[in-house]
Length: 501
Image (cartoon, rainbow, N blue to C red; front, side, top):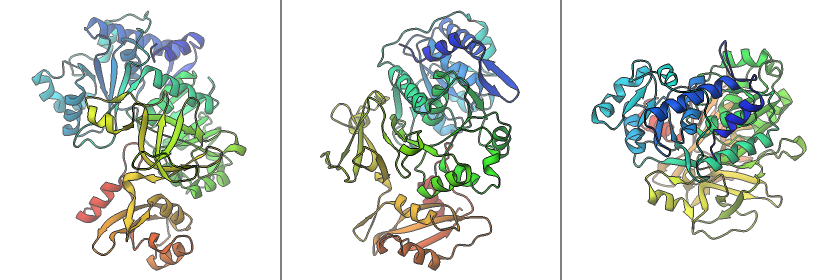
């Protein structure tokens, strides 16, 4: 088995179909597979052996995809790093993963010089580096078959969470990503005629597996943008070139402020949100304005996807992330590991082929991430109904305890989104001498709207218990966010405490 077989199969069945569109450039499946073969055989000539690590630290591009599959075809492990890492973060993660070679950009060469001088990094592949990608590909052959690897062999390593302390490099297997890609294509009814718009970074599980790999699996076309660009996104959708739209809640919230949205979506037939929980109010408004249901699934870097909310409108449940996908089991447990009854809230635990192999060079972290040998502890709080639909309550680590009562930020955020003046919100807990923690709401108002704290309190008191109602309301023009579009609540708190924003 090799994950790269999905590219080889699509190239065999649909050689002339476009695999990637990037600006005015189109790369067919035959060309993408040929390029990946040349990179793979070039890497092998340079001495790369099966199981060795090869890094990628560059923005999304057709070359990124070709290099990724070239690494896999050579039997090596693709270590995918964010192109936005600081110098310190990049050095930390390369020191942790120890890739022999790194595909990157010329702009990162100064950051990488200490690693090159120390011998930790053997080769940089970029313009101005030890060799560039055309030189590497020129060393290889276009005729090659991916080297077979064991089902449980690591295919790729993605880093999750912060980059301080012990790095968490998630080891994902050939079998796991292959299974995930097929499951996503199945639930999305993907076809070779689909065009998926992708501006999510490929170092993130959403961009790499959910969008890129599942599209390659189904022989669809990836319409690439290097990053989020609202004007360009609307140009592409309105032109009728895009059939599948993937994004995060903050982007859907922003799009809802645009007039004539249904017309501007063109031929988009499928919308999907991930990266953070989607408020029910936003799902309802999107359906009203566009006629399209925003589909959701639940997963994380360590296990993706766990559930899928159904494509069929009559089976889609607003507020839920759906039922477990094939071959995946879900349990709800308390903090001691005890199995809870149906409907009770507790930590979501999962097992199945989508679960990670473990954390790289972190046996203690891997042990702590599981109950027993195979039940992954997600760190998320949820509950299941009698039909097996899963409801995400909140992150275990984001739970606010105020006056001895538990407050889940997501519940408060759901209530705030029902207030017409609120465009986006984030609820966090601040230390408080009297209450232990006090509930604080950060709010971005809709254009032209104002936020009056007393009105917010009165509004929320009709929807929430008194202890859940925020004691403080802070108006912001924007929120700090990760490259994947997730609101960084810890950074939001830090900025407010330090008065830097």
